[in-house]
Length: 175
Image (tube, rainbow, N blue to C red; front, top):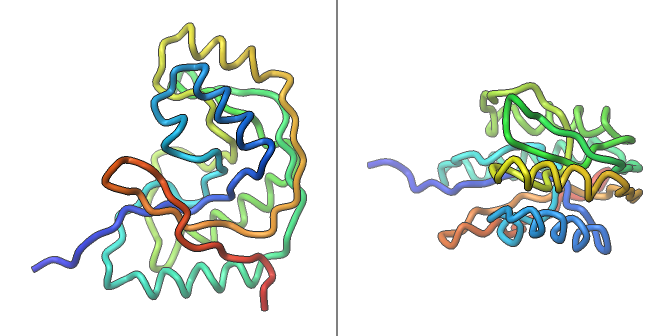
């Protein structure tokens, strides 16, 4: 008999008032995930985790958070992964290296998994929508700018209703 599995993700959440602004961009693009996945910077993409590995994963995330210092993050302007994937995003302009380090440490041990593309921290505002909607999202968010202090990252659970819900926050540098 196989162990029950949960689908998890780990990400840096985007605080208010920026969260609402980013949801609005994603909604305007017609992205069906606009209200299902809170705006975030992914550290671990959707991953199946056996319940028997749950405690090991939490311990690993706690260690990663304790070993990392809080940092300033700035979002500014838009980018796209087209033509490789139909994604438009708000770019990370400051805090890139800290995001890269966190991603590297999170995506190992109990949470090791291969990824399809090299890591590029960003906040998705349109995904798998019509070309015109991608273009409009790219233009409408081009002037977006936000700066905030990152103090934690969050483990999210994917629900049966397709919503991503925050489950556990891991405070950076919390010794």
